[in-house]
Length: 95
Image 1 (cartoon, rainbow, N blue to C red):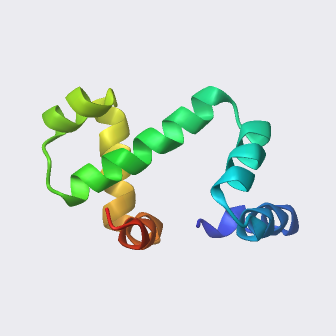
Image 2: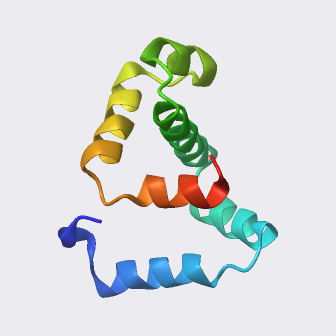
């Protein structure tokens, strides 16, 4: 995570996410915290990341997910230059 995002209040958000114990709690919290559009965008980016790691083409990813090439490129940059968060989760989920 970008160092400028680290703050006591951001720590509380991360602690809140870490405290969730199951999928039901995650749904309840995320549905209160985020808009439907924000949640759909996050799930789309995770799917894009998995497809990029499988070496699917931008055209296939866009067709299958509805993601724009700009979104696909942003996820690609995160995979290539980010903090490895996508890879951590993709590995844990077996994607």
